[in-house]
Image (cartoon, rainbow, N blue to C red; front, side, top):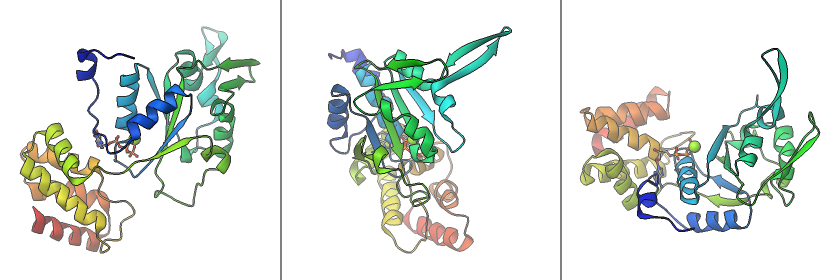
Length: 265
Ligand SMILES: Nc1ncnc2c1ncn2[C@@H]1O[C@H](COP(=O)(O)OP(=O)(O)OP(=O)(O)O)[C@@H](O)[C@H]1O
Ligand SMILES: [Mg+2]
């Protein structure tokens, strides 16, 4: 596919860290589903937005949770003007529009819901709607993408190998220091030295073993800090509320994080 200059400039901003774009493209061309795994706020959703735009496909997002059932995804009968009519769910809409469907936090879904999607994520590329006895087949431009965060609630919800092995899995992580600082200053307008100091602080917290945190400083958190700084809040105050308080409710750990912030910024 050829992209014009206008198309390129309207792409969502995404900085590559590895071969993720090339692998995603090859998966699209070969009708393989993709799983993005990586910590919260490392750019998984942004990457999918960017790829959908680049491939010229509509993007349909489904936030998965334990209450999601197969009918929520595939469709159900609803009452409309005193009539009972069939309403397609997001999966069927995505198939019909040859869209990219993005199952965010797929591991949160119940196993029976994921298994109902198995025929869609292997060579069959179809779903069976038992309520209306219909099979809906996907075109070659339809694609399934899913994400999960391996650290979060790990052990609670392990996906079955029969699910995991249907997906090509791209491991994602935070950008390297240089690129993360470039991203911060281009997104928020803070100076490059301010951006570098924030990224350095994030790296110290990410690699330190002194803080017992269930999740570390994401790119999202330092973007929030930079936005507050740009809005006129002092860098320390901004980092206290958007990094330290967002990472922990334990007063001792929060105060240790704030000490580190005060030393670094
Ligand atoms: N490589 C990157 N290029 C562009 N933006 C990025 C990148 N990495 C992170 N970001 C930015 O960081 C923020 C968080 O990214 P995003 O929402 O994509 O994270 P995520 O991995 O989907 O997180 P979650 O698991 O919580 O859904 C967004 O503002 C996004 O633009
Ligand atoms: Mg996301």
